[in-house]
Image (cartoon, rainbow, N blue to C red; front, side, top):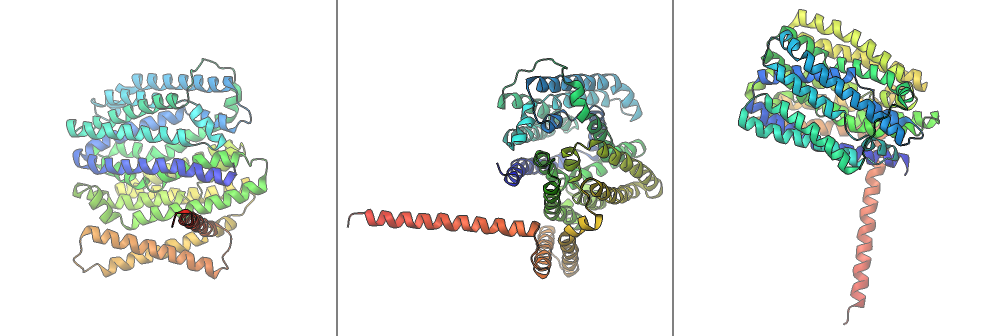
Length: 508
């Protein structure tokens, strides 16, 4: 299969599943935000943050190790599965032993069973069939997409049902556990595999996975450290508001990017011996991702007020400034999301670990300093500043990996940056026009979205035309539209020709 076509198909397969999952997440947020309290979400945030950190402390990226290898046999797969089983046992044991001490740290004895169930959830997530990931090396993503969607669908479905019955944080905790079990079972039904215990290739797999493991650990600390720190010093209700804002803001950007990253890595891995093609592919993919995803994050920050009022209700109005800051935070990450797939494709996983180490030591003092100086808002702003610094560091790492200057990388984002500035102007203009108008929240949100989208697209098109229609994401989009139109025209002409032939053959 053509590499570009394979990546595009993979992105659409996983992206379609992730979009469907995001829609379920949005639906769940709309329902759960009205059935549960901010304190409930605070408890869930603590359990989720600790589970995520523990998962990362034991994450070996076994599936990616299989994808990266040129030749994989049954013993490699069995070794990866056995290592995953050991990891799952460790996760369960940790939560069984640490549940009570953790409940004391967070001053809530009711969290003991919550931590135990969270451990079971993490264990089941790690026991999915390795074949589900391995087939993506052949650019086949349907099975992985279905497993990922089933986990979200099963978890959200049960969470909503239990929330209606229990009106308790247990709805989300139990829903997450059920989704993990359902997805694991489905993975073995889609691609039959009866695992065998084996540690034959531990050293071989660890040679790739060791640095990925450390990278995952510090990446998760980067993502969750703010909630772990904040949870120690603020009431659970305030943490719940902050966590809800984060969950809401992450949907259009980070959640959308994940399937693209999964599809991009196998494609770039196939180009690891051709640096020129790898560099060109990265620049095109990275600029395309930022052009498509960054406006979703920036756009959410611009319309956070009406969006929160409509989606979450009046009891969550305090989350609006945090949604604005978190949405900006995640939007910044879209400009360097290609670093991880490139480094993994080249086997330079140590660099990813170094990147995360630097990011953690940048973020922690900024969050703590912000929390001391400005409370929750200060902590959120500290997190945003740390992400801006991290993005600049990631641009330098890409310069090292691919020998492309920071200025050259930013040049490929020029159209996107131009569009984002224009979009911001458009939304602010609508805000001024509607300031004294007595319009409903829905009309306010719709007007801002339409204006922002129109200004963004118009600015990019004008900049592209003014610069002589250079190759890049805009050219790819235009070419794709032309191909779709040509395909429709061809089908229409074929149908017309077939109808004419039929008319000629009819008896007079």
